[in-house]
Length: 138
Image 1 (spheres, one colour):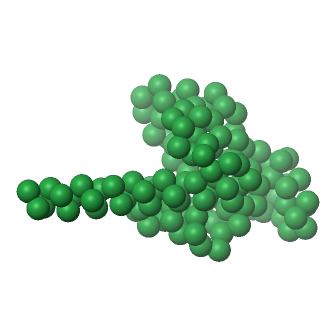
Image 2 (tube, rainbow, N blue to C red; image 1 turned 45 degrees about the vertical axis):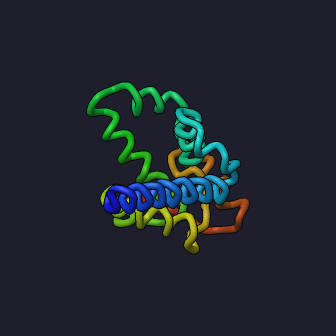
């Protein structure tokens, strides 16, 4: 019985940490934090943060196999929207309990919606920052 109680407390602590992390990530991106706790609406807001259309939520929620691909892609755009690389994306996928709090409470700064190159560039120019990898010529 004691182990069940400790397990429940640990489980609730992890849930609280993830909720607090997502709340802070949304706030860093200029959205209201409460949007991160409303089912479906949190995904719509996440698509706005990463620069993709809201209909992607349908793909993530309803289309088997494609949902995994689009969720991984969304996490990649989220990490790049905060100036992180693909390694950070892999960390978010495999060890989210560590990497989401790092993104939320660390020194990462929202650089704009990575999934929309025009909006991303406009956001960076407004902040006076340089170019990102998809702006470079091959």
